[in-house]
Image 1 (cartoon, rainbow, N blue to C red):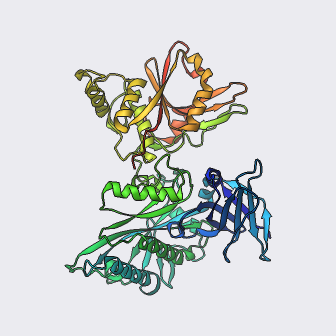
Image 2 (image 1 turned 120 degrees about the vertical axis):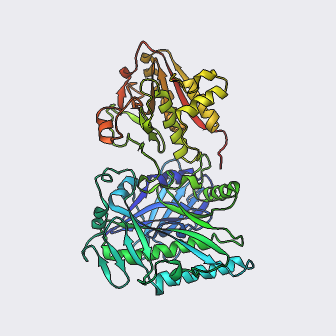
Image 3 (image 1 turned 90 degrees about the horizontal axis):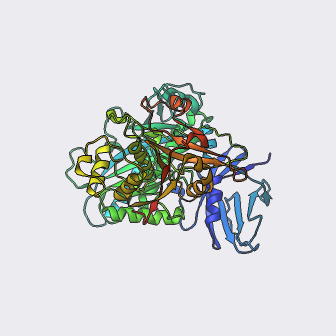
Length: 555
């Protein structure tokens, strides 16, 4: 039976970004008779930084001609060859068949949404403290202790594992409790479902695993898996583990136990390479950069100076992402499992909406944002706060992309900013006065050091002429746009544009909604929807605040 080779769309984009002859390793998932290639690394191995389930698949090489000098490892099954000088067929995929012979094969593209339908994350978080005998040879002592932890968890004192939000218990050699012995992992996922979580379609399904000591008489896992005694007076250091496995929903639930232990083993290996001679707590951070479209974890110190932490993140990003135009691997960029950190606002409410421009091309916001609108946070701004809310949506984009860890400014903080800048009199503070695109741009500069382009449109009818301008903005920057006209403000999330016919539709996020954050209601009532050019009033002029990137990335 032939094997289907699938390459992620994000991977193909990253491959094209490499402009010099070099070699790297590729990794991905194996699913029945399909191999899913998701990523590559150039300068260092990232296998221990990936969820368990991801495998090293083979080698990738960029060459200026057709002479590829690949030296695959014995276990390699895939080779990617990219011809930098070719004008047409640049990428060749080679597969090792059952006869151990390499042959050229075709490939298909896929996106991460396809993975979300068939795969689930098993996430195990726990914290251990380690007692250090002396300051000398700190690194050696801690590495020995981590080795002992690996042995105790994965080999000798195997823990009890519980699936949070369910009655499912996993025990060493005792099978499953709380679910049928022949059940699939999907059945465990369904046990975690509630009416409140059924609609969460933006993130990967995640089963959170709680680890307990295998001995019923012991409550503290430190007593079993580290060397800490409850009455110890020795100096201790703390490590936060966050182990991730990636498994198919169709896999048997009885396989979860050993897979989770292997994910913990991999996370311990990730911690080990981060141990230095400096005594400081360590924390595992998991990321899901849009440019990768797969999970990757790194261990950072939690007590060093911010500059030191961010320099570590920048070095990692340089090796893994190959793109320094925006931050991806800082602590504040960590992935929010199950939308755990986005607050009450809806995340990306435009997802799932369809446009209808014939032969149109969509240019959309790049990255996540939150929907801010009237009456949120128990604050009554009905009738005057639409531009404030649009600004908050723009600010949330920069926050969720990792440009800042600042909280989204309140109406009062926005007004205070404009007073301090001298744009408004002192009486503006705590008022119910409107603001417009110019004030929004000033606030972006004040809070985030972000410049904006202001596009002046003399009437709503003229909006149809600016399709190329909006297309270029979303292609180059991908930031949401605040637009003000007359007494109303909206947020533009994208356009659907046919450059031949000049037909144009706008993806609009409307801050004038005063009701609940109900995604179905908001989409059906048009609070987030595609609008024709006639949506804009021909009798009003409009100003668009189009945010750019910061002058320098604040790592």
